[in-house]
Length: 115
Image (cartoon, rainbow, N blue to C red):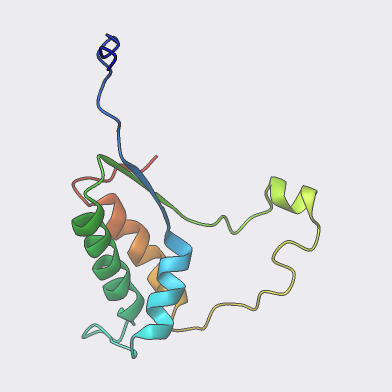
């Protein structure tokens, strides 16, 4: 039997989670029937987004989380592959106002900092 090797103490490993916000939003939108606020604004994707995010936080208990939204403008991916997003259709009208609501929601969360 060999003696354990002394190693310098290390900082605890940080658990970082990256969230594909656009993926969560589309998934929630298509999974949950249309829900609206009293003023008629659809919120089913917002509800599903926060529900999935809170479950993820409860299940994984990360030290840090980054919520990443797709860019609507041209990015380096378009330079690499001109057909990037070429076949994507426009989001449904009921989903469009929910992107801004989700962005405002995530920037208000205690554990999330918008950068």
